[in-house]
Length: 303
Ligand SMILES: [Zn+2]
Image (cartoon, rainbow, N blue to C red; front, side, top):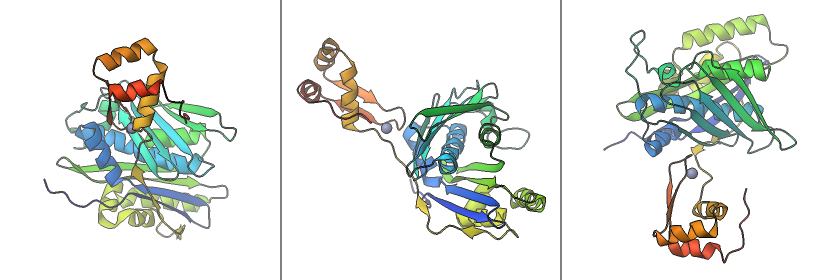
């Protein structure tokens, strides 16, 4: 199967309207494509996870205080997908999964679009977990308002974090392949004028689908369209982003320490043990020799 080369995923940041608007955007095309392949996602599940993955990176940039700060977004709305979990860091590391990767629905009659709301559902919440400055995890949540993800993330930022904002998220697929995916988050800062907000709203209304903008001219084009007439100032340098899990063979092995010695004996007698990482769907086949060596090894640091 031939594949079109996808743009390398990256984050861009900027300000507009004399620092009264802050922007962060992500082109997550090849990240979402990798998620689709790893998890064998249906077309609609790809869109749902792709939007949530993109949102997790944008939230990590907006809410993360330290380099490498991570944010976990969990969406559960009672629909056939079950739940969606995505983790993003402000240095561009993303991973995520869904409960039911095969969940799918026909295109919506009303607008011919993927029915993300239909597989997510609206009877539930969106929860965001991050680490506070003191290292304690903090989770805030909002009831889902749309199930389409972008509006729900926007609601979270507005209500839970008191940040006035606009959020655009999108995944566009052709056949079985993701051809453009990403997100754009615009924060209104103190001192923003009504005139700026009116202009911003008009720009967003007229720019069309985010994914069309990404396909036509990339992330910078989308950010430029959203801030037309508002003097976009781009922060120097794009932050590369990628689908990257923190699992490893050693971590999979270390997880067996939580079992009793008898349980490990049984695993060895059964010819070894398979450990599946839910985040990235990687399977680790641990051999009886590796399991036997665990009892002789000092414990590795758990992070
Ligand atoms: Zn993993």
